[in-house]
Length: 230
Image (cartoon, rainbow, N blue to C red; front, top):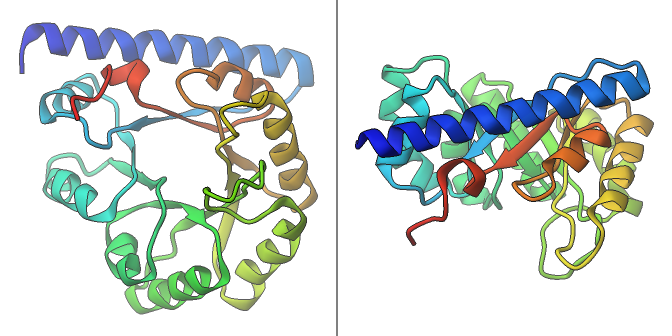
């Protein structure tokens, strides 16, 4: 790992964290609610040198899209960094549920009854009760995963009461051609209605706006690591 890579990633992490802290403080002043925000560094398809730079800078919370890629990248690193916290933020196939439950700490992509049931059964089998977020397709886009907003309440209840998932929050990815704010506001409304404290929303281009609408986790990749090589 070059000194330049180490310095660049460390500086980026520091700058992003400062912006997160400022946005969270502004939210507290506006609402009177303290809302600590977790920075989930999106490490998917990033070179090993950049991942090692982030680890060397002390960052420990990472998001991955694919189970198999995450296993290759993180399974052996847990031996050296036992305070790692891994979020699955990409679509999960039911045949990968066992591996996902074994590796991750938070599953942010619970988006259909079949997957919820498989996760519930697997968590009992492995005796691992992970935090789960329901993914809401706030824009009702056909190409995206997620429960449509009108079905969210019933699905959250199913996950909690029928399959016993530890649902602690919601996640969304707003449409790229619409104002993100209305999607963040909608997710916040659904969360409050269902007594959920955690909201994973906001990425490199809009995380400060997401925090203004109550985000408790923001998923940031390029602003930390730079553009992916592949």
